[in-house]
Each structure stands twice: as structure tokens, then as C-alpha cells.
Length: 164
Image 1 (cartoon, rainbow, N blue to C red):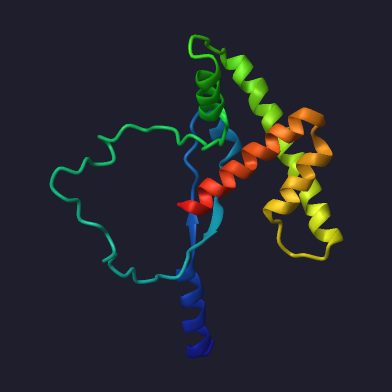
Image 2: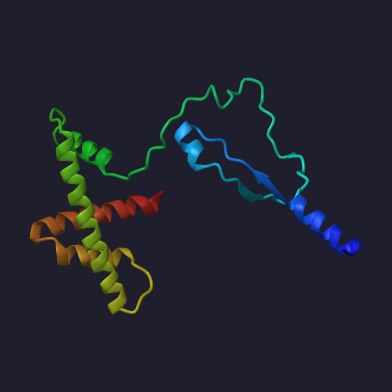
């Protein structure tokens, strides 16, 4: 053979190595007497990792830290329901189930008002929902006296917001 071919064969033999599997039990030993061919990955020099953070004095290591679950931030009207209840009836309490029902109710009303205000803005070919669209949507969705009270409270809130 030519010397070039022998060098290529020697290089190929270095890339491939014969490795025998170590059986865990005697039954597997009888089945796995065959050797398998495993391809070695080419050698790559590892660069030292310089981006490691040096812990500050007083910092706990990862083994010392307690593993806690990250809670999902769920936005609710719970605080506001409680505040309004205490304004109206200071001596009365409310259960968590009742707060959940009120929260669902408020989310539903909010969604309906937003959809109706969006329709009104779209009909008038305006890209922005203003307090006027919200007021009109409130008149359309809420019945009679409830709509009047809601509009007066909303107007009061808008004037308070613009003053500050």
C-alpha cells in the first residue's frame, strides 16, 4: 500500500474506537457480548468561562437557597371590592367565594363595556376610545337608574384624575 493510504487508515482508526458495554446483570451479559462501534467527537479546546459571577459577601450559595415557586401575578378586583364594601357597610364582611363571584362579574362587565366602546369608536371612525365612548357604552349596557349613577361616578372620577 501507498504511504498516503496507510496514514488515512491510521487516522480513521483513531476516530473510531471499539467500546464494550458494561452489563448491569448477568442476563444482560449473555445478550450483550457484541461490541459496538462508537464514533469519537473531534477534540475541541474549551475556552475558560470568564463570565462567572463572583458571589458577594453575605450572598447565599445555590445549595443554601430555598427553592420557592414563582407565583403567577393574577390581577383581581379583590382589594377594590373590599374597599367599596367597607365604605357602604363598615361592619359587614365578605367570603372568598363571594369575592370570586364579584370578580367574575366585574371582569364580564368590563369586557362588555370595552367591546361596546370599541364598536362605537369604530362606527365613528376614531382610533381612540375616549371617555365619551365609555359613557355611551355605559348608557347602552346598564339599565336606567344604574346607568345614571355609573355615569355620574365616572364623570367624578375623570374630573378628579384630570385635576391631579
